[in-house]
Image (cartoon, rainbow, N blue to C red; front, side, top):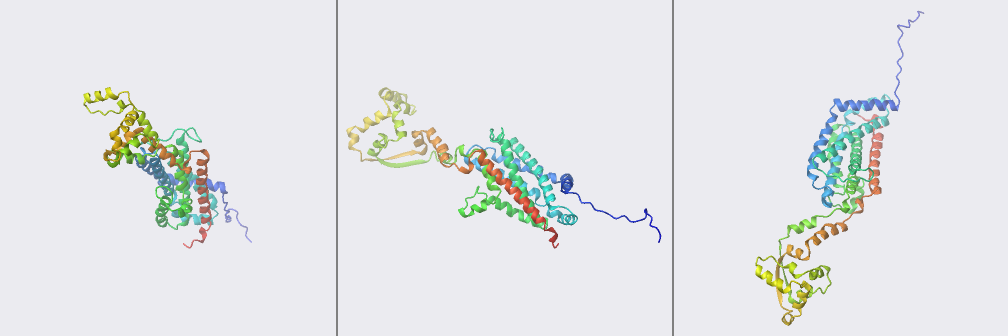
Length: 399
């Protein structure tokens, strides 16, 4: 039997599959190359454009009033959800055949998902930085003192990153479920609408929808940003703005002389009326332009208080005889408020009404903010786990 030449003998090929850490480096490097060569970097200028547009709208709203702050936080959360969702909505389904082939060749699904988590976390971090920078450039004013860091903008950045990252992982799972990019992009609008409608933000929802709100990333997102902007300590401007809008609206009412005298004599012990009664008559003289009339009134009553004049008029026999006579008073909303005290009414409508509208969900405290961060982190790992489980069945794909 002829001897076999070692040089001509066929070699037996041995395939060595890398371990999980080795595969992690391979796939992470692949994603970095895709970032550069497949234009995945375009998500950054897109994030900058969206941040600029939203920032120009909310720059005069954030941390100014309760209503403005809430709307601004809602807008920022939607920006984060949008960025996160469109980062990863196509990354799995566009290479589904490649994943299936490499899985059969020894690829670990958990390692593949972990590489996406690492890559997407860096992408979300860059988007958060771009968003914060651009919004500051266009004039958005963030609070100064932070809870966990010396700067609240850093705390807010952590919240925005967690919102973006959780949305990214949610979108990654959808990409695992979809068989192609068309299906994924068809599902995406419904996910965004669900996040918007059931966020518990701009739309009033019935009580039975609360479990659905708890399933959204936007719900803890809005709450954490609103709390960090110290919502409960801000004024509520809606009611005062409404009053300013009707300042010159005419008001007409009919009262009897007796009712007017009883009110001005403060029979109900109202502090506002008592304050008016303590004022000097000279302080309330109108600027009529008639110097002689003003001087004559001043000479007669300059040392008298309003209360003293009212009491002396009320005791006049003629006034007593005509207590049942009715009079029509024509004035304006503004004059009535000025009589009570404009600053006092404004302070009451801005702060006292706001205090009654304080929401325990928006308390500025470490425990409250940390609780929302934990919920967002929980969403992140939940969707990552679902992505891993879903891709484990990719070999059963009939395509």
